[in-house]
Image (cartoon, rainbow, N blue to C red; front, side, top):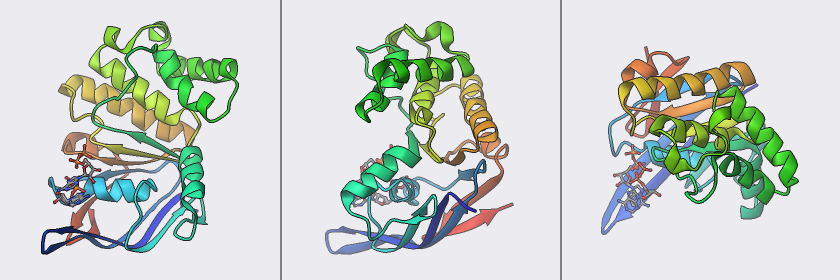
Length: 225
Ligand code: ADP
Ligand code: ADP
């Protein structure tokens, strides 16, 4: 059964007197381990869709099911708790905390969520090892390459074993070879851990390596060949 479902999701914005119907009727379902590329021009609504799927923003209409749970009637606190447990985020820029090591950056969100610090760091190191970043664990972000920084951000996003990873142009700031490596990290996590990934990208070579490609047309999801 799917781990993320968007059903009939709509969202508009107002700009002065104008009404912008960004998402009109979004239907999308992701199964465990499935990787889906969201490919659409700038301004089409990719970030809006990812924010709504990630429970960062509420839609005007429709329902989002995360791990089977309907979220529209949940309180903000319950949505936040579900988001922290079930959803990981990766952005174009890594947003690592500059004064903390790679290991601390990965472990910190879990300690904030109440996990014992030693246990959080043990898990973080295991994950960094899996991503072949073990030798970099004690380095500050400024001491890492761009690709390493982004892989640490991926480790941080999946450290609490979420069901779903949402990524907004995760390789948009990287050279092609580094992008390929960072992308391979995402694919390997999805295939080996059952993580479902929805990744907005302009990189068609990378999109071609994913299970499905979708785009946005008039605020709806259209499957690409
Ligand atoms: P994409 O990620 O595909 O570039 P976005 O979801 O960021 O698209 O934005 C879709 C459209 O909605 C754009 O025209 C953007 O300017 C507009 N938009 C996004 N967020 C807001 C907002 N909070 N208020 C008004 N307009 C917004
Ligand atoms: P990104 O693509 O990195 O998410 P965006 O510029 O699309 O960056 O969006 C950054 C933030 O600004 C988002 O929270 C989005 O909703 C908001 N935003 C985007 N466009 C507008 C806009 N025209 N008016 C108000 N807020 C906007």
